[in-house]
Length: 196
Image 1 (tube, rainbow, N blue to C red):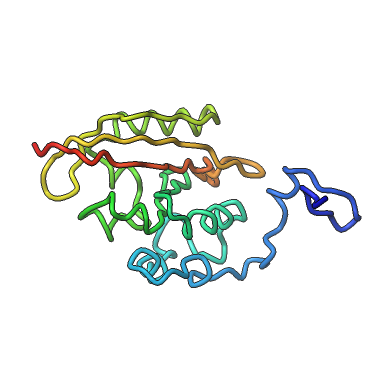
Image 2 (image 1 turned 60 degrees about the horizontal axis):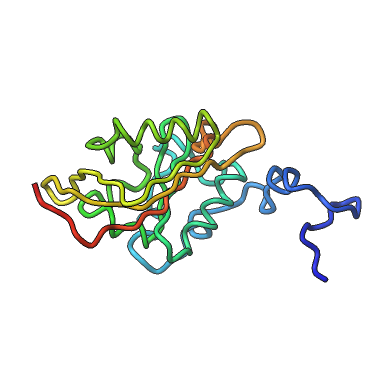
């Protein structure tokens, strides 16, 4: 029967916490091309982004938890995003890009509150619940008024925000320093929207 947990250097099984907080296997040498390898506009935008000019800093200095989350999210065909750090900097996969409309490519590496300013009064409160309470939140067919194409539109979403825990904080993960772990968002657009 296969092991559910890998053995550590002492030959004993490691705990989930030990596995999550262990040193990065690549020992800090991760590069954008490794995290964003896809042959699409989204991955290309993240590869070319000057991360040193963002609050997340150079990719090779990202914490293990963020690197792991990005490696999970980017290849997924389910629309997903990560909000990381005290200001919830965005990283999302190509499946999520369609939801952004004209907000892309500026949304890449942008603060969530800047990207989603038209609904941040509500969504920011949900994120605070995840970050401060370390508990997931979700909504079903939740209505949001978004501005993605130069006009306001009524849209409906099913989503969940889940924390990404780190060894000491959250990612902020958002990461605030890792912390809160940032919540990730799975979204499904309602095929019907109303233009305002």
